[in-house]
Length: 183
Length: 154
Image 1 (cartoon, rainbow over the protein chains, first blue to last red):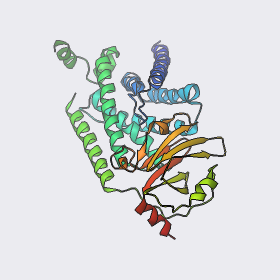
Image 2: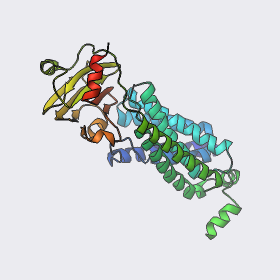
Image 3: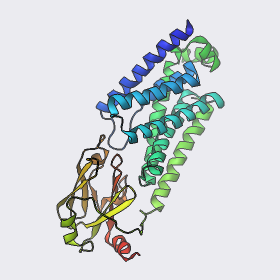
Image 4: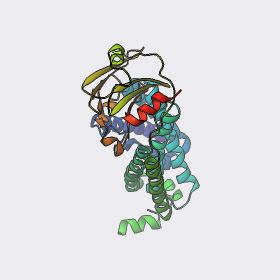
């Protein structure tokens, strides 16, 4: 029963991620510097809290593949960049959420955003011989952090959506929740 | 926001500052590799000018691992680069200025990287490069002294 619900939700989340990714693409938040808000990252972060690691990783892979098929024309370069960014960012967020204490979704989002850009840059430099530009890397790190902070804040606001036992596990329920509602 | 969040944010800011510092310290590297064969359609015109024609700056074209022409930037012109699988980039050049005019790559990031001039490479985000990642094509603007250094190489 619960598995079925999770499966349906997972499908819904993939759809949401694809739509968000597409909207960002056509609204061209790109500026030509590879800067994106990464709203689909927000969904992945929420999934990590909601479903745990294995399903979230599956969702990430599904999203990357589907958006490559639908919007990217299966370009191997963009596909490998997306994968590198996605995997590194997921690993960072998993570490923050499950292995570190005292990190809120904002911190996890920042780590995820920065590592997403770092992963892409690493692949571009190591695999595709993109020139290593430290100024550009600095910009990417800052942008990743800011955008990750925004997505993390969104997840922090959406934590009431999580099932009760998950909220309890991550300390979102009970005392902190009560104080948040008062303030 | 919890306690560790601040540590993370400070870490990100620190990393960015270090990278920024590295960016200021490292000048674009000069590789002393030779200039191999050509895939540039109007290569003959470019050669007519000769790679060491008088100019304040030069454009060096890199595709994949290989370096191509050193184009003197002393007036308006157009460079068309076609590759085996139909990739095409059209570069417009002017005195000490380069811009990616058009390209048939999927994302067109190279075209959004704007005009690169001898004056603005010091503070441009991409420094002295315009890069088209899907076509593995990099354009580097070299001041005259760096270009001369290249020519003297082995």
